[in-house]
Image (cartoon, rainbow, N blue to C red; front, side):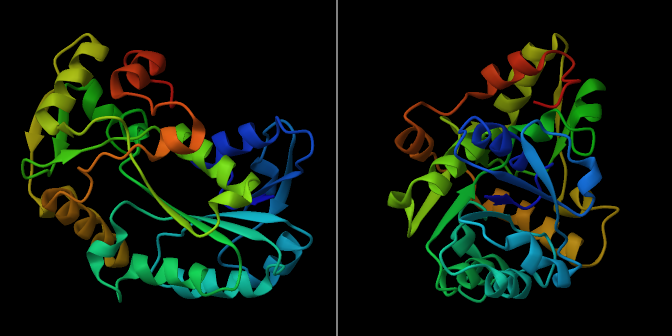
Amino acid sequence: MLITGVRGKTGSPLARLLVEDKDVDVLGGSSNPASVDLDGVRPTAFSWDVPSGWKAATEGVDAVYIVRPDRADAPDLIGALLDETPARARIVLLSEQDADYMGADGWAPRAERAVRDSGHAWTILRPSWFMQVFTDPRFYRDQIADGKLPFSSGGASLAWIDARDIAAVAERALLDEKHAGQVYELTGPESLTLPRTAELLSAAAGRPVALHEITVDQAVDGTTGFERELFALTFERVRAGSFAEVTDSVERVTGRPARTLPAFLAEAGPPFGRAT
């Protein structure tokens, strides 16, 4: 089984789950295979920028976990990758919650359509925002350490999800053909307003964390091009409530409830210095 982006937030925990099955040979796709140091995972050269290497990366695979690349040409890239992938291979795509919000011609639906129309058995995962944004210095960890949570919510709620729960669903979808043709909207067990989220962060950090409601323009400041467009659309969708709905998909697929935000933060430990 090939995992693209094996060092990512869902790829890494997925690899750890799959290696526990002695019948599964886990290929860890990375543009820098030497950086893949997960026990039991075979480093595999894979880069969205090097199509010439895709055939070798997918040769002989029975399933592929595709972490959708956040770039404008993602739909075309995914389609081209699947053309190189053995027809028998099951495909699990990491998409996003309420992807249809963008309309049939939107970027996310087109990426999903590349999988649906590929001729492969497929499963699509549509998760809400990852809880890991609170433990990652590239997102909110350092601001939280300074007592602030800058966010553009417009008063909407989010059903935060632990990336490890997404990985657990992906594992089931990769191993069990009964999930073929399914689209799973994946969320945590409750929808939280940003003020409530800040309260939970404060309790876990042992210090006040204040919500700073900002505009979408402020939220995307410092980004450019497609990254800025995508980031802005994401916050607009937050404000429209795209990530507020709660589902029980994690429990239905894995047999256990999705982790709560307090449980996630307690495990990460103050001041969230360890990315969980």
